[in-house]
Length: 345
Image (cartoon, rainbow, N blue to C red; front, side, top):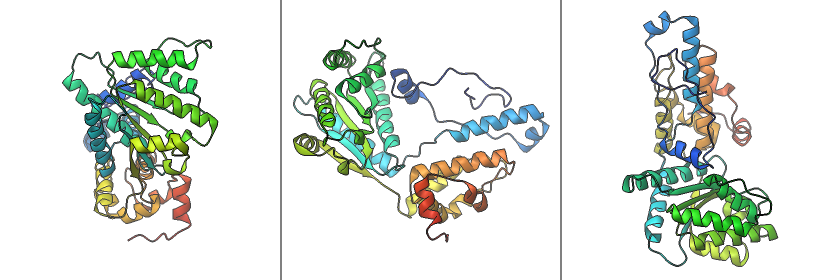
């Protein structure tokens, strides 16, 4: 069910199941979807609502806060800039094309940055070639315990190719996928969860060789994202050396307690739609929020959105320090905060 902001507060619109961005339909929905918007009703109008209409309006606000509001961080800007440089450099390259690897800890915004790179590139390509016949970007995730066939199937699944028979081997599937992507003028391929591909294993070596086949047969820039890629075995041996020699490595990490962090908190606070929240409350708590989340952007987003939904459910309609203390985020952040210094400036 999707609640469309801007409609009548009592109106709920049914929607079909949302496809993940690892399918062409889901990716296009992601690219085309505007950021969620919601305008708070006035206190007078809310007071005049029936209980049913008020409950429906609350559900709309819960849906609004549950959606991740993408903040254009310095990391996202850097990844999009570097990604665009590489796609331009590779545009007329006939040999080994340069790629991009995004490495970092959990909840540091790797996937968000990778997807924003793809979204920005696709929107720019659509503007340049408005016919709609191209598939500028492909987004897949590296299969767990992957094999060449599994990787090929991920690409085929994204494209919505017909059901693949067990008799089709990896070469058959890959050849078909490459032909489709070449005809569709695909020029950016995004591969997430690349840390699952460990070149220290025979399976990882086979998967790496297969991925290399894709890079050599597709006139496209490849961008990868994964956790602690440098230590995951991806750069092991001759194959790893080849990958390291062809790719630019960018890191994501926790944000330091600085002006950008305070700006991120202020930006997220501006997206709140609560009836009694006092503006500036979260900005004043930016040091505490940094301690709570260890500077992780994903943990910060989770904490603020969960607190907003909790404020709607309990009727307080505001976020306070006490309420934030009652919200649980990921275990790593909780362990660092509960076991460390809980003083806030």
